[in-house]
Image (cartoon, rainbow, N blue to C red; front, top):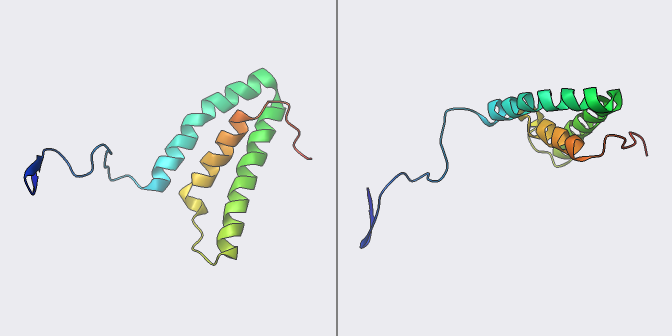
Length: 102
């Protein structure tokens, strides 16, 4: 229980967020791994072009994040996996016959 003036707040300071010992990288890798069955099923239904689209979106997302971090002279954090998840989510929102080039 926390007392702030005349108001008492019961509970945790971090609410409504759940705190765990997992790192952001671990959470992002788990999120990317959870998308794999849907991506594989999508490539089974729509063909190999869907899988190539996922690879292109993921690779371009990771590359562009690294490029902008280098240009801004920031620490490169592509190993955290957020760019990979962003690229996979982008690929899953695009139509299956989306052109890879141009």
